Image (tube, rainbow, N blue to C red; front, side, top):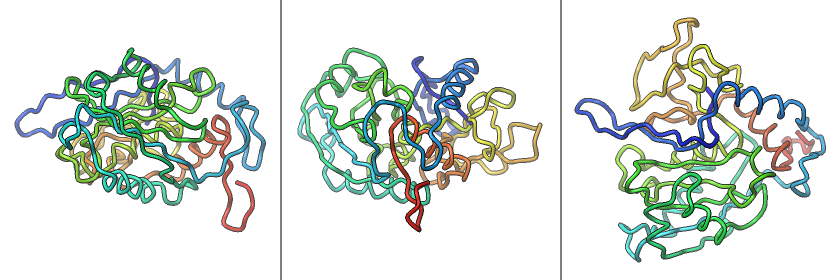
Length: 294
C-alpha cells in the first residue's frame, strides 16, 4: 500500500541461496503520521475533475507528458552507463504500455549525455552529487518527467523518485533516478524489463507502495489495493500476509517489489489517485474519450 519521503528506504541487497534478490527502492518512506499529514494537505487542496489548480506551478498541462532523459555515465561504454537510444526508446514504450488506461502517456522530448564518474557512482537521495546533477541537467516544469540513469554500484538501489506534492518547495529536485542496467535489455537480472521506471514514475505521479503501513497502518490511501505486511519479492504464489482480510497480496501491482515479469497492473483506485495528484500538484488536465475534462 503506501510509501516515500526523505529517509532513505533501503533493504540490504543480500543474495541468499534459494531466495530472490530483493528489489530496492530508495524513495523516502513516510511514517503513518507523515502520510496522514500529506493526505490532509491533498484533501484540502484537491483539484476535482475539470477543476482549476491553485498550486501556482503554472498553466494547465496536457496528460501527454514530456520525458527528459539524462544519461549519466562514467565512460563511453555500455558497461559504464552509456546506454543507447534504442534502450531509452524501449523504456518509453514500456512506460506507455504500463500506464495505458491511466489517462497518462509519455513522449521522449530530449536525451542528454553527461560523462561524470562522480555522479554516476555516488548519486543518491539527498546527497551533494544528486543536487549538483539535477541542478545542472533538469529541464521543463512540474509536468515534465526528468529521468536520470546512473550507476548505484555501491548501494544496490534500483531507483528512487520524488512525489508531486514536493515540487512547489523543491522544483530542482523533482524527478526519477534509476539504475542504468534496469532498462529493457539491461544487465540487472530479473529487473531488466523496464519496470523500475514504471514503479518510480508511480511515485512521481503520487502513488505509494502497496505495503505502506503494513496490515494495520495508514495504507496507500487506495481502497482497492489489498493490505500487505511487507514487500513481495520474486513472484510468489498464494501470498497473503494480512489475515484480517480475505484478499491475496497485490504481487502483480507495479507499486510492489516483485520481479519485472510479475508486475502487470495498476488498480482503478490507483488511477483515480494519480489523476487527482497530477491535477492538484502538477496542473495536469485529463481528457475523457468524448472530449470532456476529467
